[in-house]
Length: 450
Image (cartoon, helix red, strand yellow):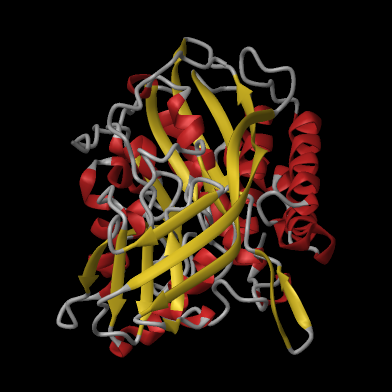
């Protein structure tokens, strides 16, 4: 899951379709149908353990974007899809859905205000999209943050302004500044380099209240880099043109600063747990062989750096053909509502959640509305792009995000997970989705973002 204070993915409402892609004991007590009896044999603890342990192992190097670790993870997911017998997307020769971004790595940064050089830990630069940038009083406006407003709400419009700006940041925002500084110190990804006319750079300086004269220069290296979602399909029967998507992101943060000798952000809960659910559900539905609608299983890349994988995936679809999206994010621990529960982001935006709960009648499992509205989780995960296009696309999670001490740390490891919680959530999703995949229920659409 993207950090709350990382820049949100800017979603274009015009990203309409290019073409339609055709493409155990602690579990809740489900109704005694053949399918639910079978799932206990199909999705076992040993199977879930195998998936999560492999994805979150140290040799995956934290599955950081553009690293050998994420390539290894993609190979593993592809091999699981092949074992299950999924088909690639139409037009694809493999399960990899490859696209490209340009990686911008800042090499040098020099900036002075009124003759004083700004220390690197007090200097943050955003918007670098070319190899060399020079700023001074003539081409850059000066803005001072309002200390009565939050850092986050002011930063977004400044970054989207399309203007070169020097932004003076009060010491009050030191913690926020450091959080963003850590994010933007890492290489950034853009769709393409820009020329001078389109380039807009924002320089944030901590601890300065005025700037009469200033100048700065920045150099960066630019590389064209591949990214890849891993996507498999079970074609539908009578309603093959109608799509149901099951998704989770398989990337994580990679290598971080060492803590007690450990520098690998394994991402066991975020989101090896969700990726495990996607693979397990694919195995279950393939074995059942009774889906009327086409099912797409997607493991997204680059969620942690801006949701690029799900954005690209969404742009290849006709959103009007997507009936529902089950995005699964961090299901490795009990939710705040207790065992056999999960929550659904954007619950009130469609009747998706009500349909799921109806299908769970008589079981011990309950789906609740998102209890963390202030966290804006609905637009912080991979459901966001399709939801903005009107799809009833929701994220299912159990994470207690307000108190999760392992979130985005090197401590997010397999040993912290409750595998029974993961199994019960997977099995609840499998049952609750039944009327959607067999074509008898169609969730209401979400109003499109304008």
